[in-house]
Image (cartoon, rainbow, N blue to C red; front, side):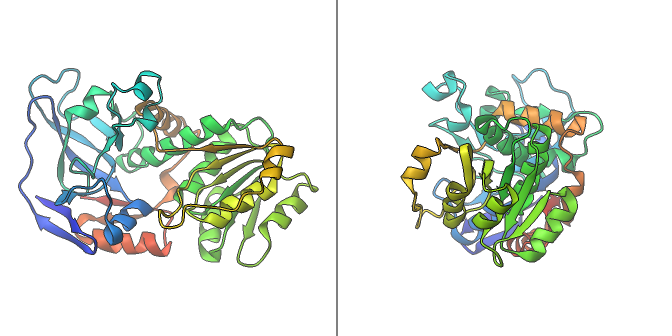
Length: 346
């Protein structure tokens, strides 16, 4: 079969590799869609400390079951399924407290296990152990189901953030995650929503899809001043930094209203993970700053439900469908921000 195999940074190849077979406790999938994200581009160029090469990468996976190993019950050949990306152990302190998204023993599809940029793949027993293989609801396409994983991450963040009815929400980052955050915030009762980015073309593309109440180009205006102007000087109630930019986190603190909530959704570069924080703003405005890390199996199930119900549509956000043979072209499209969401179809 064909697969995209990572050997080292800048050494990622489309190859013919042996088709895997389902062992005891495993399920084999025919991959129908594996969507891409900025993390895939980072892996291409920089690798990842948790990725053991040679490795088939790709972690936003949807497909259909073609073989079931011994000892696996409850599934049938032909079932349409979505696979979690981050795999909790199910046994540690965090997992036993229900905090699976911060499992200390977490593994991941496309890192420790072969992922979805391939014609076929194995769902390992570790995924099945934590109920991480999900049935795709009727009426939801494989491409939409592959987008459930990033939506699950947004669901985790917004559950922690606690958007309340009528909140003025700011989203930094006009990528696919930013688009999903806007739609999810609306579903969670947000009032006005402002979208901020420094890329005018990406801002327009995403704004045309999700229609924020205000689009703010950070390359042209002072975003803190603009948010204060739009809120009569009060600031934003909830702010999500869906971008790996230090300045966005600093600006989020400066533009937050009293009793405001901030989600540091996008991680910062490991070479520069620090920001300047006016602690008095946090203190006197009684700000609440939260981290958000990935998602749990439960978040993935909720994402599929919200896609199926229409509460958070994702079909129109998938603006590029690329065959597996051209997957490296897709990485370029993602890196240049030329599409909202890109999916690979083996």
